[in-house]
Image (cartoon, rainbow, N blue to C red):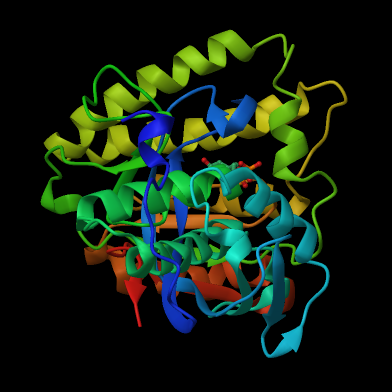
Length: 359
Ligand code: DP6
């Protein structure tokens, strides 16, 4: 598929109004996307677990208008929200060429998250993918040709990527790859693809408990962080490492070697933060309690035969990943030793999910 293939060629704009609704999950990267080229093209491939319970629920109501400018209102958790408008405006501008009907309608976008807004959990992946899916449902009812489910998901992922890179990995489950990589034939820089390789039972229903270390606004956004990979002294090596780690992870997912899984995932998380610390300007998103939790996880792994490990996204919160058969022990460990490191003792229990749903 090329970008041209995603342009809606023929549509019928007799539809006066309607309403569509989707719920779309967040995802957590195992091999991290950090660094991008123009048009949201990633510098390296990434792979993520789709989450199950951390979701955005979005309803779009549309009504025909005179075709002039974009027109939309956003309601977040029932209240009109002006702060999200510029991001959606940019998104509409980027995707208009692929969805030429966007100026024909006024859109009322009503959105809410299942996780607390001020949790420091990035909602751009679930939020942008939910909007992309709603717009695809509208496209489906306007298009003069049938859109297969495969093309529907692919274009939703393609559009979501133009909203926020990692959002393209939230359409499907359980594992999604984004970015061209030799070891994964169907992989593309343009959209996420469901990981179709073998996945050992050790990785079924993998658990992710998110420890909320810092719920505040980040000092440096991901978008700025990505830009700082341009001219970064270690960029090329890092991009190559991500390719290699993805190929290794593919083998590990098939063999069920959880020890190797832990090494790749933790190294990816620390490398991501090492890139931030070695950018110019440099910055640190981890907090003292992030390190406290990492050390406690390492100590716990040493004294037990647990396979628990951690990963981080672009923030201070810690994602604790573990096999389903360790759930009872790890939740005990979290309650006894890690909750004290969380802001107001807050954490969220989640697990691998199957992707977005229309509701
Ligand atoms: C560290 O997808 O939030 O979570 O494309 O600028 O919207 P934009 O960035 P974003 O970056 C996410 C980076 C990450 C790693 C990952 O999810 O792969």
